[in-house]
Image (cartoon, rainbow, N blue to C red; front, side, top):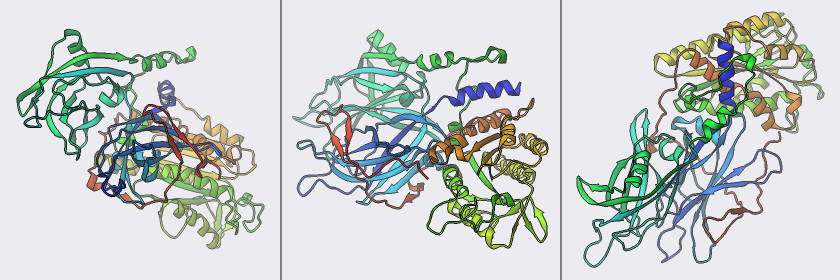
Length: 592
């Protein structure tokens, strides 16, 4: 039954989604100083919490790439992501200074993870004030467990010439099947063994979600290079394998042939290959407790239940429509004690706060940033209008455009009236959503729509509204109702709890006053059900996510530079030690 399927989906989507962040930079400014060669850059990723007063926390740092102003770091950062919980990170780039430990800043930039997911190819680029561009990409992290690997090379072909020996290191590359074709992405780089054609490399600890999407039969490539100080490393050979084949090679003791242009250039022996922790994800699912009266099987798989991130990564766009209550119960907007009053000192009323907090998150997933803004409950020419256009144009640009359209209504000679009726805006949004998805589907694309209703009072006819919502549940649409003010919202909660056999649950109601002092809590509560509702619609229609989009470096639009952010990071001498965040003027950003 539809209800049981939604319950299973809800269990799945409530588990926090893991994503992985990868970084590269181009055209960095050399800060090594005169006669000191070229900078050796590394990057530090720091999370800026939304909670007011909370301190930044370092997620980790990349490896150092020697003598390079165009670094493509292999280190990938894996962390939890949840729609509605804004996650902001600062990427800080430094030139390593080993002797003093006083690393030199090369620039920094702020990225919001949701805005990365909303960009084509999940990729975003920003200019650095000191020169250069930093590029960040985020994607879903699939699978669990780690591979502990140790390898050695034997009789590698020397690429250095007479009286010198190569300095070999190896890279591990992940196979990616994208919409534009297949690629090999570098995800690990070993340390270099100097002056040695029979190197024994240090142990590798590789995250399987990064190396092979948790699939131990997925192809993996190992490539060996001779390190050159200038960064133009010389290719020594490669081989393709899988994680399972590496484990088998360790058990058998058989060497793997390293080849270059079809010729043998050495032998690689696997000394250790242990897979650890692959059962953790299935264990977490099996421990989920489900009410037996629902008769729901708790066994879930990623193949049966694609995630919100799968659809967004495949290019699914989310269209937002905002509907605002202009009924008389809001009070005279000229009175500072009423809900629509516009303060001259820059303070925001509750409608403005809700628009800014919620729409800035949802706007990340709309590529053209154009939004319809509707009004209801106002009287024009003696007639009460239950659905009318706000602003001079059918759609407005960005969150500021939504605010401008809202403000514009008070200059149009309206009379704030009543009753509070939602049906027309729901029907309009549902028709628009269905039309947008039909047009997208014809081009092999996907679109999902969200109607955000901001209202100060209970709906006049709950039964009629419930019927409109049930009819709209067949459309690719979610309806978020935010109650502003101190009215009795019992009827709204009834709509939130509305269920009907064979129909999707598309409604979420949130009382603004319960979260009025915390924008982060408001967005989390408001958008909590969106991933479930989006997945349940497409899954119910038999529409699976498209292949992840890819984007060429030349196609990534570079955003303007930002002010430098001083996090006063303190680096320990040992590379494996934590990085301590000292004094900073970056604090939690959740307050309105």
